[in-house]
Amino acid sequence: MHLTTVILDGSTRAGRVEGDEVVILDAPDVGAVFAQGGSAELGRSISFTDAQLAPMVTAPDKIVCVGVNYLDHVAEMGRDKPAAPTYFAKYRSALIGARDDIALPSPDISTDIDWEVELAIVIGSTVRDASADEALAAIGGYTVLNDVSVRDYQRRTTQFLAGKTFEGMTPLGPVVVTRDELGDGSGLAISSAIDGVVKQSSSTSELCFNCIDIVQDLSRIITLEPGDVIATGTPGGVGAARTPPEWMVNGTVVRCSIEGIGETVNCCRLPG
Amino acid sequence: MHLTTVILDGSTRAGRVEGDEVVILDAPDVGAVFAQGGSAELGRSISFTDAQLAPMVTAPDKIVCVGVNYLDHVAEMGRDKPAAPTYFAKYRSALIGARDDIALPSPDISTDIDWEVELAIVIGSTVRDASADEALAAIGGYTVLNDVSVRDYQRRTTQFLAGKTFEGMTPLGPVVVTRDELGDGSGLAISSAIDGVVKQSSSTSELCFNCIDIVQDLSRIITLEPGDVIATGTPGGVGAARTPPEWMVNGTVVRCSIEGIGETVNCCRLPG
Image (cartoon, rainbow over all chains, first blue to last red; front, top):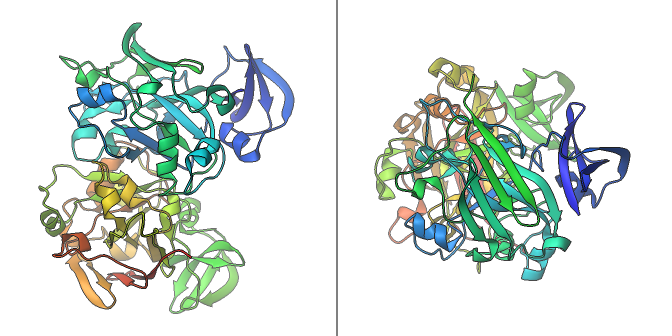
């Protein structure tokens, strides 16, 4: 099943996508569909192509990001292969819809704006201290997250958070594909393109820690809840690792695609 | 004014503390009192001494922590004086009340459990791209946070989050003292004690980045909202920096005190 979250009459609604039709459901977002264990139809449909998409989960309790989790990206960033998953967070106000503009910070704050296509897990059911089987069963589905990064803020201290949680810069969508279609999320082509030029191209089979590993490990630390979003890391090809570095600027269009899910397509916009 | 959040009849309620009396207010927690711009009395009082305290903000939109922010702690951890504030996050399920037990992880997960007394800011009003004056005006009040840390998880990768957000390990309270009483939060004695032995003793005037600096800097990245909690860092004297290292164990009582606010007193408890 392909679920989505749209903006309708000034609030958000979950929907089930069938072809170009979004069948509106009785839930405010995909997280609520999982929390409710499924949601009734409201007897209304809209066009998916024309829909204004919200972040798939509008206010997740947790957004967990995994860093340095593709071997090629580990190499390009000059890091060692990790012995454990590297976690950092984003706050909810970072999230935008899959077709929204990315709110660039004012140039006097930063111009080092980078792209990172990532497979994101959306948790479907509560899980703590999970076995591998329980970890898989707790995955509700998968979506695309562009972990847009303000690199100089990411690197001004040891901790990534500052450069990862700028407001309105993290696209999440366009749909959540339920686990029955994608299993453990491995074997999916994953890519990004800047103004039509492919920059990242890999497979989710290249993850150092796969989706089951991550959910299992995280569940030793905290209870994961329906709607929690876990971004699993980005493959090689980011702008910071290029010579010279490449950054997104006002008007740049960034497209992030994952096989079997779809794509986020966002234009970078300076304020004002 | 001293505000608090108590558990009453199975849910949480804000209150105003007057001597040993908690005057119950029409708000679910201190964050809501700030968001409402003040809350009406409900005509009921309880004893502060006997009250079951909740975290002062039960579900903050953001918990931001500042690392390596006291010069003596920077030195003991072998780090350089920072050029910018070091931010990391906690998730909400880490928070507990000022008198609750700290839920130790099972010993096969970790036994490296450390204490960190911190002055925490509670944001009182929405602020973005703040001047210094606006940053100060956005501070609703101050409380005590014990940033209990699972050191081996904190250090297993470059990113602190894993060791900082274990569930049910971060006491927050016992009251929020409004800004009119404590100004910019400087000049306050801050200390922690383990089973009655003082381990940390400093002043909030030793902060590398003070409360105004932090709110101002964060507000360039994200909008801060009423109820957001910002832990400003811990002074020297943590267990990890001692020779040999000292950890909290089952039955350890940790007391974190800040002049003019009060103290968290929590007992560490293994599961089961």
